[in-house]
Length: 351
Image 1 (cartoon, helix red, strand yellow):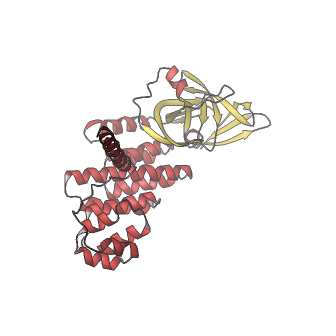
Image 2 (cartoon, one colour):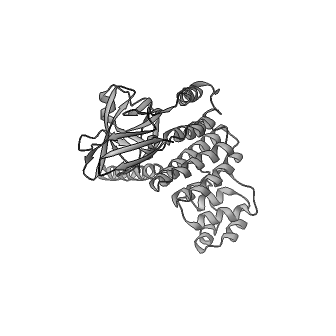
Image 3 (cartoon, one colour):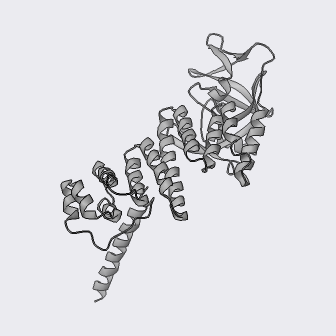
């Protein structure tokens, strides 16, 4: 009897663990699923045979039948069944959630966003609205990571902009768009987005007003038409001395492939900057796309060439040759620049 009870306990724990593992998978419960006590007779066989019209007819217009049949199925057949159901029956919020989960799993991000916009119109309860928020956050994060790996920051910009047009009540995406544009050095575009929420209540509006004030102080200064800055070699690359906010001395590797200037997180922490409270942005690294703190500084200077209101990412770099970070295009894009490799000189001409 003791062994039987032990076996039953192990079996029960195993089943429970299996359920918990399944439900913990990404996208497993983005939208709560409705269940039937029993599927209509013959429905599973029709689904296995691919008789979608037969299933739709057998369902009697109940989306729960479709939901239960496609449970955990991320195939094209599952999506096709949802679309076939919609040809003769009203759209269902739960079915939209399943369609989005399938599209996300196969990397159809743009189509998933289209379905999310439709799901938003179908949302009738507070829980529905929260589910849409979760769906939107999950898909946009996955899509942004995919695009950043491809170096398509312009497409990330377009994605956020489309969301602000189609779902303007999601005000946090105006902030995401503004911060992305600030990160890319597109100050005019950042103000256009941030101005939409500067009067919003709470921390969102306060953050927008803070960024706008910083951008409005932006200026590019050269004491001469062209500045020549001495460089030092680090292997086949070049390093320049830089100054953050007129006091933090840095050695930055010139990296025209970096959209944003990066400084080693340990270096910034050693100078007293609190990284834990800063907003996070996505960055492409050798280990893939990661989230890291973003800091806004009043100035970044190379000799007499200074850019104000600049955004810097704080990432763990562990670079050699005494390098503290990367000088990215959000500084360099404000200049016509050229590296004279023979003389180891960076020439900056204000645009």
